[in-house]
Image (cartoon, rainbow over all chains, first blue to last red; front, side, top):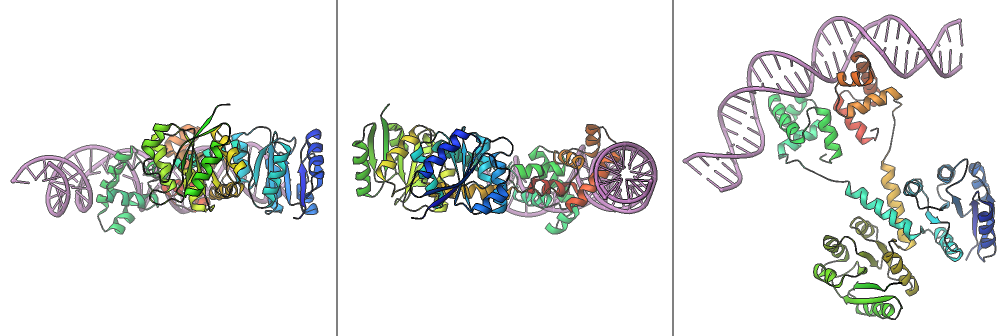
Length: 213
Length: 213
DNA sequence: CTTCTTTTCACGCTTTTGTGTGATTGAAAC
DNA sequence: GTTTCAATCACACAAAAGCGTGAAAAGAAG
């Protein structure tokens, strides 16, 4: 197995030194450098070409998320493991959507940390199980949002609403459906009643929000 | 520490027996029962009241995802760990959105399995790191869709657009912002130009689609 | 066979939107 | 010190949307 080259960003000197010693004392790991801030990630990462980057989230100056984003601008491939003290919901979310490869708590035992870095290096996405739980919860909640309240619209009314959402005028809808404009008008009046709105734009907004699109 | 009560659904007799023996031979675990299909989950789960359920995905008859859904109908609390041979993308996705508490590969080492069950029982969401990687990828791709093209709207124009999306009339916006209706009109004209639309409802639709809301 | 709902259409009238064509002010950029 | 731009306002006119009120045909449900 090849040596895994690691770059470290961590402001706390004790923790930084601790990780360095741990990794340098482990066969198969090589700490290229350890920085106390990520003000120069754009130069450092391409210069060192690490396999895995350990990035602390809570750093003064440029924080870890910002650092991650800047790394991704110059290198979308390198594995970045986020380190943090708290499994704060918002940070987890931001890190993930910015392309983090894993998210682990600092209290992670040394043996675990080694294991996690190996997993990250080989394409996995290691994360503390409490963080995984959060990720799943977010995921489930995203999918729950996809509601469809329907509002008892008739087939024809749904058709009309579709055109409305597309920004068509009454006249255009009438010609599309081969009916009189007054008919369209009457459909729309009924739609507004059922959706409890009283203008086109409100209906469109409601259609988007409630996924009747 | 309290004993963790486990219920097993797994069609393969060897694997089923293997897990039973492993868990029953481990202090702190108690296998309540092991079934070869999940045709009767609705009765079995409430009857046994397990802490953790191990659910194989690939089962004849009712598959694991379906089983999970049926379990969730009668018990949204019990921890369900999905077991599978392959880390198939679609299954992972379906399991997660149906409320699985973890997703692990069958090739997981016994010691790891024990650990995972403990994590699930204590509220974590254990998953093989390759599966976690998939989850992150899905997550990132979902959020990539959340684009924000901005369209160079000025601060004031964004304000106006917000009210527009809320279904306010020009007059209402004017009074809200303490400006003349003609000013609102002029802002809206500029907004339409920047968004390349020419009606309120199109603007609202675009605002929703491109998340300028 | 009646009742209900959906779909269709009509007329009149008011309000709201959309468009064109300006102008003034103040702040920031060059 | 001029230029650029955002934000403000004005007036006029045409098009579209919204509202009330009413009604006929067609099909399903009872």
